[in-house]
Every structure is written in C-alpha cells, then in structure tokens.
Length: 233
Figure 1: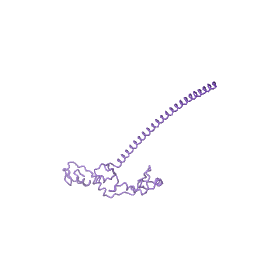
Figure 2 (figure 1 turned 45 degrees about the vertical axis):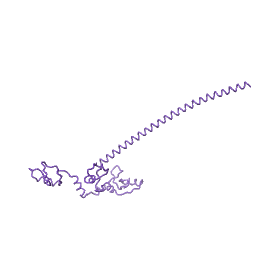
Figure 3 (figure 1 turned 90 degrees about the vertical axis):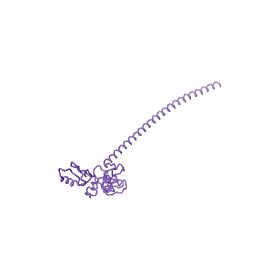
Figure 4 (figure 1 turned 180 degrees about the horizontal axis):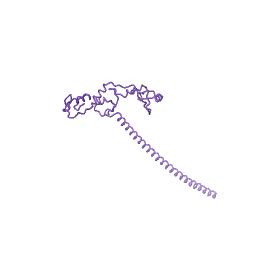
C-alpha cells in the first residue's frame, strides 16, 4: 500500500517503479500522486487479513492432532477432551478422570473447535478489553471489534494470571492477619482465664483460712462455755 492509500501487489508496484523514468519523480499508477523519493511500501493489514481469511488453509493432520494433556508436566499426547471440564486428557489422566467424575468426552479435535472464532472460524489471538471477549484477527481488523482496545491472548492471560496471583497474595495476607488476631485474642483470653483462676484460688484459700480461724474460735468458745457450765453445777 502507498501513502496515497492505493493498494498494489508488492512485486507489481516494484516492477512499475523500476520501469519508470529514473529522472522523473515516482508516481502512483492509480491517482498519479507524485513521490520525490522511492515510496515506502506499507502493508495493509486489513486487506492481508481478508486475503488470508479467503485463502484455503492447508494444515497437515499431524499439526491438527498435536494436542497434549493438560495435566502432564511433559508433552504427553491427549487422547480425549472433556467437554465439561474443557481439559485435554492422556491415557493415564483419562483413567483417573473417569474414576472421579462422569463427564462427556470427545476427540481432542473438539478442543480446537472451542479455540476458534465462531464467526470467522479463525484461531482466537486477541482479547478485547472493551467487550471482555476473546476474538480473532478478523474480529479486530474488520469485524465488530474494529478500533477496540485489544491485547494478545498471551499478554491478557499473563495479566489475568498476575491479577489472580496478587489477589491470592492479598487474600493470604488478610487470612494470616486474621489468624494472628485470633491467636492474639486466644492468648488474651488464656491470660485473663489464668489471672481469674489465680485470683479465685487465692480468694478461696484466704476464705478457707478465715473459716478455719473462725471454726477454731467458735469451738474454743464452746469448750470454754462448757467448762463454765460444769463448775456451776
């Protein structure tokens, strides 16, 4: 694409410029706009995307089936796709999955269908910040999300993961603070209980001593009165 906005095949426009008079300024074959220097050829992304969309896509069966288990640390080929959990399963994890839940299983290629734009049948590559939706290149270039602010799915997923991690960290810190407050409250209650127990123990010990003294005094007085009564008889 030239600066004037007209589109040409790169090979064709280069050949046209090469055949023009070298002593004359370059000009657009369509509108005759003059360029005093060799014009910089721009890539019309919208047009390229339309051409790519209309061109038949050729992918080998091997490329289509190179899907790996969601749970395996290494690249272990998946043999089934769980439509409920949206996870790819190898033979080992399929057996574990079937023991725990009864979900609808399909071929791994169903995973690819879930990762394509339902409108343009293209791979989802972008995340529309305005509509909070995963979109393909055609949605962004010429579709309903034109001129919307978008990010690549990689960047958007990294941000989402970072936000989730930060939220988990904040939640963990809040939980740790609550646990610490509960521990402090427990220690405070324990200290209050110990203080009350010591106070009550001291109170009853003092009370018991006073009762013993009173008991001794009363019994002594009774004995004294008894002696006086015997002398009077």
